[in-house]
Length: 192
Image (cartoon, rainbow, N blue to C red; front, side, top):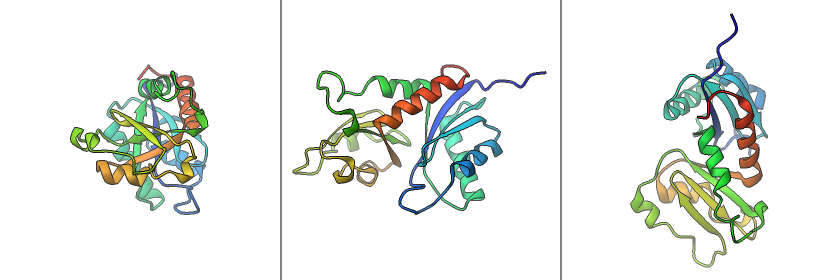
């Protein structure tokens, strides 16, 4: 009997590991965590906590809690985990408002992924800091960020959005978003 293929493909993004020497976690350790949860064929991308995996489970919020708890149990780190399914990451990649008519430099674009939907009132009250040339557009649980002077100089970082919106956030470069989309498309399983 051949093994059953997972029916759902997900992209998980973990906030704050392998950055600046704090909370070091090898990608093999991370893949081991996913395998211990019986997720199918976990594939990591770059050294910052991106994993594409398959599972029969269909509740992304529950998956995030499982992953977070297993990382804390196995490795000892408490981290935020943000999950998108294959359709959602495809939609993010297709709908960057800064790359449409304006044709900005894609290397100056990032996406901040929120762990859950923010309150509409918090989104309405959200503004870039005064004097900033950086821009953002919130679309549901995703924030497209354009930083003409580079992400290292922006004030529109994870902490800014977490403080203003009251939800966990993690950001990825546009190149990483596209790579995660491609990995999710190649993974198998159903469209979700």
